[in-house]
Image (cartoon, rainbow, N blue to C red; front, side, top):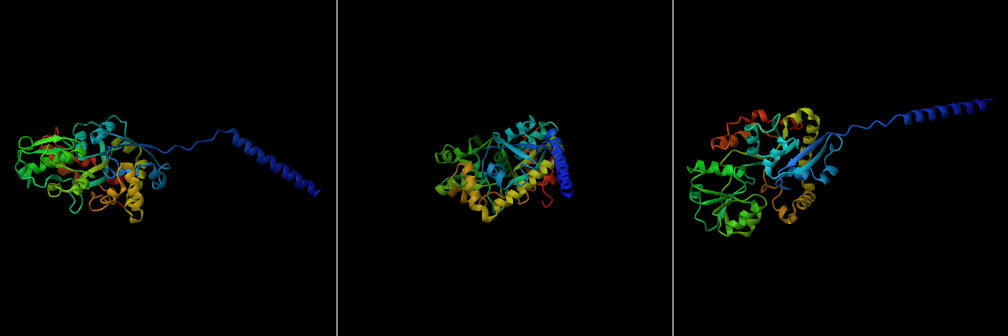
Length: 346
């Protein structure tokens, strides 16, 4: 009898369990909500010039960015310089992008981005003593020794009204020269400036990374000046977001920036250097040995460990733009800078 009772109990348990499974299967599976998408627009200088292009690479997404795929998903697109990034933000085709002070100030002055734009994290900084800057160079036998000697000379920059062009104009004004009348400023890609200088098609040219390293190794050139001493330290490139997106997806932005700061620290860890150089060299299509000579060293640009950005560091070069007549009106940038989305430790 006891055996029969046990069998009946087992049958009842089996029936209950089967019913529970059947009930569960009769309802559709409830899918977990996908993490918010962040559309990120880079300015087109892959690798050492824009560290965020390394951090948003597939390898970093899979191996370093702990929150990616859980709290946010980031997809990148490449624009032609920071003005192109500003255009994508204005068209709401990007949510966050890499800007320079020139493109940010212009977008703010023209009210070009619906709902506004906010700088949220620094990428790298210029004019920091002891670190790289973009030097204006001449041939070793050039008569040009000082900024004042630039009068009547031709000077090459990568883009009119770009950040290095603004630094040039500020330097000229400080030394009593009229940027519009006293020098001939010409525009050419960074990679063409060194050869043009050696062919004597220009008198002076600005060299960005990695071209300044490559040209220095060839010899026969010298630096006249760079941004150090011309302007206070300022962010060359920084992350900016559509202000509406910050309001709508603040948690995703905070998660991305937490990953960004963590990834930057991982990159600067000496234990990871060999792997970082190899990955970056592959992305930038440049020899790893050449990159290893300067990348992430004092020969490179300064990067704040916490990616901190401030209105105080952006305001002086923006004021210079207004004084040079490059903005339709003065811009007070404090309302467009917000570092609070960075991790608290920053």
